[in-house]
Image (cartoon, rainbow over all chains, first blue to last red; front, side, top):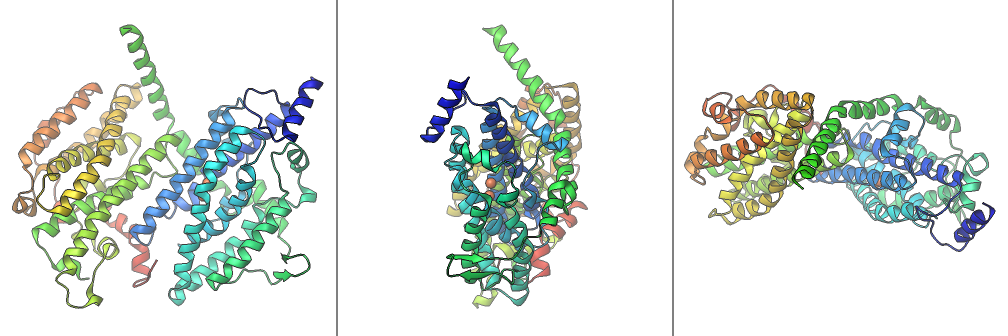
Length: 312
Length: 262
Ligand SMILES: [Fe+2]
Ligand SMILES: [Fe+2]
């Protein structure tokens, strides 16, 4: 046992990826299933707030872009569920855990999408925040997770550029469009910062995850990186971020920023955000309404394989 | 609203093709994020994207044709104006395309009936004398070939799956049957275009549909229903009550915020 653990840790230390059939500590496996499935659920639940606007997109081109984007997110969910399944937990089990509330998804998707500008703001800020996390995860220690991330990252950076570009159009548009753009940034800014999770000092899973190189940067590091990136980009839009304390700090070579509303953060995590109930209800409804379809597909497949056996 | 004043048969027919694809795409896209299983959610969204792409190709061609007769650039029309600023009486889509999604079986059945029709039609249009129409047909045919396969497989899977899925598939087909005669009940613009032979289209269509239904163990006399004249009007802009709600949702942004770039 001891030997196993040493070998495992030395692989990690030498940047050798852990693969599905390798020995791994139970806690590593559990931690990964928790994180990957949470990540997969976020992709799937994340389809809902944006999916909201597919039927109302303001132009045919934007409709096509949004449809394709939400479809990409479904694909991400699929890669991630597959990566998690290599650790021995089935997709059905993970989905059940989502529906029972045992598994979490990113809290950002519990905020409502109220105007068209929210599509741009989500692409720019939410996909933007996700990318920083995911770029780091391309180098995570578990092979299948890292490889899924490489594919996903390419699409996410495309989403971010599309989101920014769609806000850019609004920022050059009429007064109404400019207001719509600023309002969306105001509403999505703080929740985006919360996406990186609690401060390092308050984060429960962080230390062990860093040692196992599941995570390679701390929540606070990633959050700072995000703020620095967005504070630069927002100027190109001629918009502002809703934080009076946001200021370049020459000494730190980073932006200083105001305090996040942690009370709101925990309220949303605990299920009391604006859309927690709707999001989960929508997922459950889709799953329950589809039960007869999945059952029919299974029964049909069984009939087919029996036919093949008979004729063989 | 400039576009609809021009009413050549060709343009009316192009609206028929564009609107049918757009409205069914709009319906299929309602499923995005709500499908019964992730892989099928992705597949149906893909087809909604294909249909949207086909609709755009026709609208862009209409805009091109209309703009040829326009004197000043301010009067130019474009795909968005055509899709978002016409009212329901100007929409020429098949009634079949605007019907509600219902359950998965009804959604499948709509796509099944529509894509088989499109497949036969596009096949004929790949010989069309108009370069643009021919090009659109060749490109669309590849996509529609997949729609035909995917929806037919699902009709068979549900028809030959469980008792419940068979009942649901059967109900869906019976719900849609009255809307099929419209496919082959030609509008005046179809007749004057003479672009395809409707009788042979119908014959091929019925054969293809009945073949799948037989494999699905759903013996339904489709040809009998198609030959009865039942629901009609979509091709001429006379719709069901559903269209008003579809357009209200789809056109909301352009109507609320006119004359803006997005
Ligand atoms: Fe994603
Ligand atoms: Fe994304």
